[in-house]
Length: 117
Length: 113
Image (cartoon, rainbow over all chains, first blue to last red; front, top):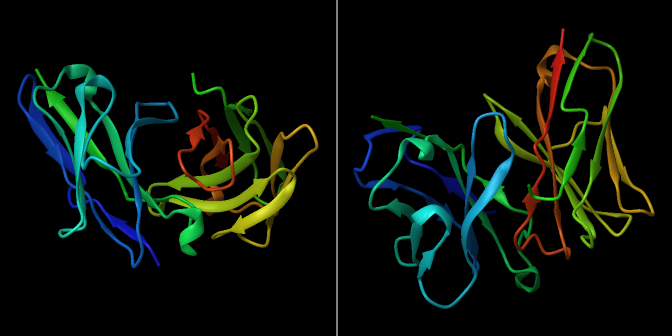
């Protein structure tokens, strides 16, 4: 079975500072990885995804993530955050349909990013 | 705007009652997924439909049921409601049945009192 662990439930940071939100996954087969953002009172919006190819993935709003197969990680980074980045961030994992594994996205518990002025 | 529409946005009901949540997927998407988000359980997958047929089942209680109609909209029926059913219920959709990138609606807030 696949699972996702987001190591930090809350990450406070000052505006314009860099940030890294950590995500580790477990799966016995190949994976697809995602980061979603949830702003207050809104649904989840896709930030970026890794399906194959380059392990460094760039997403919207200046975010990027790096897939590290040996460490089973998919950490999210941004070099300089803004107040507007304050939100809940979710890492998710799924498996290719043809892998025989679960293709339904499994989500981590979320990391609350709090950007202070 | 993801293109996934959920109604109602907010709902308050009493224990023991039954409610129906409705979801319209993005245009052209054949799969619909239902998730429950609560503080203690996080985002839990409930059920998936693909082109009218149940495709995958997660942690869905027997008191809950869902269906997808020929026009591809979906409904989640919650019955014999308990206080613990209070949560945010999300619908998501995707073009195929693989779960490879799903798009979420804004959710339906259910409060059971």
